[in-house]
Length: 280
Image (cartoon, rainbow, N blue to C red; front, side):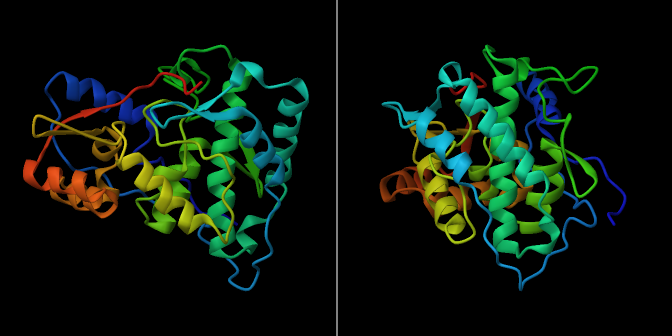
């Protein structure tokens, strides 16, 4: 059913390599490659809006996420019970049995974001305790994190986290807010939401997640007239206009009036930052 699988143009591990060049002075460009869809996964059935049950995932999120004083959502990996670990794996298994290409785009969007986040939490739990998701080297030689490892089989195809983000979500929806939905289990990442995405609520959730991140120091910090933004905007610049100007325009869309005014006065991005510490 599915076409040829092409390697993701930008993946988390590739982004990490880019960081090394950036910190060494070899990379200072606000542009990145266009993500390419894995042919076949773009199939959908507009008439089938049957919702998917994400309540099991919602129960885990509600029980183990808390918000710190800085506005960062923390997941209590060390407190997850055996019963809840089992429930999470059963939820992921249930999603793997759904013929998702026969659902509408709205249902698919929530499905893929929830699956990505549930798989990420599950893989961290399988290797916990770790200080960072980058310490989970299960993807092969030179791996730096679990993103390139096949973690699930859907409709007969082995799927990795990179596949979900870079060959399904990004190229099919072409929506920069995807980056505020998927969570890489790190402090520097946009928050893992306390409630699962659904077909009916996803758009509002993505807007809220974008606003929360951009109006936090993790997304945008302005000090002494200089703007520092998350490295997400550099790694995946293509999704944000593929230029510094495009990134600023995107930030202005969700920034509060005072932060937007400060960013406008700054006029440029001085630096980028990211914290890979586990969001526990």
